[in-house]
Image (cartoon, rainbow, N blue to C red; front, side):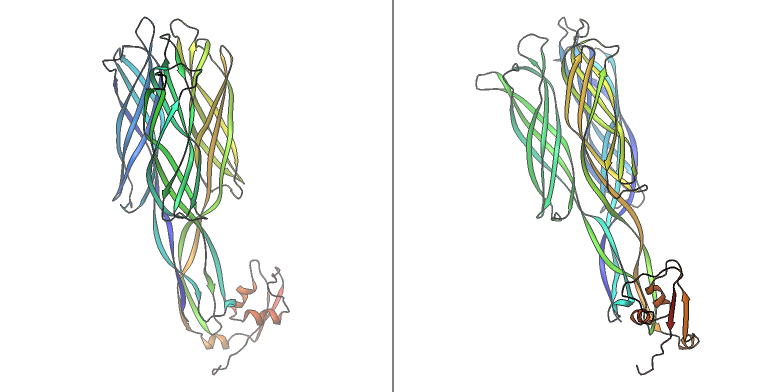
Length: 523
């Protein structure tokens, strides 16, 4: 009898590591900028641009970008901004890593502190959480069936695997132009700007991954007119693009992480000669993972009436996709300002999401964390005409994930799609954050598969010593198939002798008759 074999490609998890990296340095005020009186706001972001797996080691590099908004030591208490970047270069040691393996690496800023050293220098300290996971694709050969052996004497099982089949990285550039609305003054000096991605949509088909969404641009600038006039605006530029990925086919899943790698904004005059145009050139990095659900039917067990079968098996670990879910929800809270000057006008509200805990329970994933918010406003204060207030909004959201239960893994990607606010009074603000949460729940499955089968003749003496008939009592977990295998009986004949219908289940305690059938040597 010939064994029918099938080669299966599996994504094997190698390991996962976490670390904290401390980045610190000095920021020197350029000669063209005035001295620092007080720091209003600090913003920090980190971009990992290169990941290099080696033997037992993974190195990575990128940059930390820090932006400072400060009040100057001038009679009119003017606002100014400075920015700097610092290189990031570090590594993980992990036994078993090879250059051919796939590495997923993410970095998130946990905390940033600064200290004013003197009028011309700041010292910063940034704590960065770095998470790395390593996997590889490997192939195993499984026995799928046995030729010429009746199907009734073969028992199969189905492995439903969620396999990562390709990983790719690419970049695309968004070029666009923004025109300030007529109710906003022209730009005298661009102080800072933010860029973020919202409303991401991914479609996988035909050897490519289509990505669309919105690029949210938030410029902060000095308006033409009075020296102290500070203006804020928010724009959303729609974008779409396509990236070729060979493994991208309909029915597959595309997990895409987008990061702003570089952004340049230049101010230019409009048709009337006023500086009201913002020309954008933004480079977006896309990390793409293509995965696919595969149902594989393989041999689990078998028996033969006239031969002994010695079945060899090996263990197998794989991931089973339980649920994918994209969810939006609002985080809303009234923030009361304490020990801060009264609000005259809110200029901008920004925020970052930090998920601190996730718990998988029956059909749900409970997500907990915080939104760290910054409220930049015009204050009713002679000493601090501009003020930045920090607030923390708690997050607790229940995401419906059908089929999930305790012990499963959940991967969560979160983003802020929209920020809204209402000034309720001089010391109260209602903040609203619209969050998107992409949830992937998987189950780690441990199974066995058949690698080989050895055939040998039955021991005729052992058969002759068996009684002609056996009346047995069905035990828990017994099946007609397992009893037929134990007594080397035909499944159809065993069912017929006991007057059973095809597929009828046994009951614990039920009595069955098994009759020995001796095959003649010439049969």
